[in-house]
Image (cartoon, rainbow, N blue to C red; front, side, top):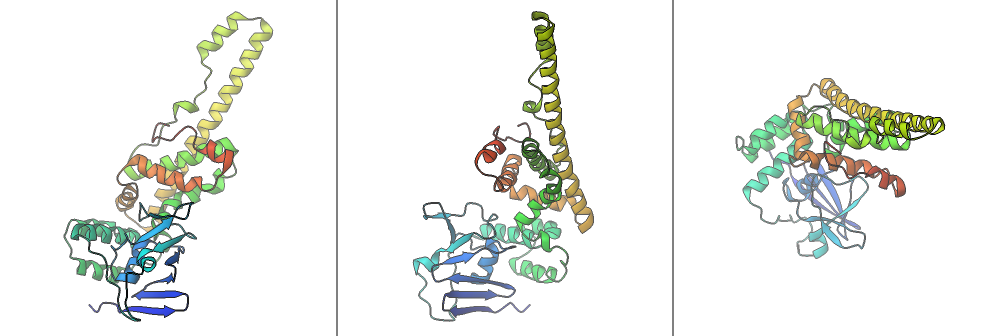
Length: 323
């Protein structure tokens, strides 16, 4: 197999790196503007000719300080990240010279290769699993990637980790965003938990205790004995109101989780994907942690809110699947 040619193109405002179908432009200040469908292994491929040199990229915090990108699978369209070697100025190479990658152990190379493969070809995650077990060499992986590049039509919207996570959310947003604020927050949390349950083969997430009515039947009966008819009527009305509100919120929970899980089933059916392969991808995004996956999805959702709505969205603190 003929490997792609690596190119370095000097521009007035930076440098464009190309390797096969991958390309990225790095500004003279090291900046990279993230586009839709981008992820770090694409930038690594364009600059270094491999999919595992990810530790050289950083983002900035609110103070402008460069910080590590803790999860290389999560960068966001529109954000600016930075190629640190450009900033450090440690690569003193002339125009057209190649940039050398920092050393990295073989097992880490293999893991990052697999993660890139999953994002490029979610329909072939089973092959990726074989790669990480050592059943294919890295050269064979490159050949598989090249071949599947011509066979993966229709998988474009699933190409990035963020894209595949957001698919079932977007599939329910047209319904959930029309709900009242309290129901909307609960519906979105239930949607995140529904995606998580689907990913790990769990039953639908149960309705949390905090969504049940705080007014017990025993308390109502006790209050009824203690007051006159007017007071008893007020107690009955308050209890009925509390029960109605709880019922409304419980319905939002059930509806949110149900729609998210059905959207994923529909995704698998329409794209003719293997459910188990898709589940593996979701599990990997959460680092094999149910709560980790749920929190990543919730953090993505939280970007839609601010101020009091954002505080309401996070109350009570989430813990899959019970709160």
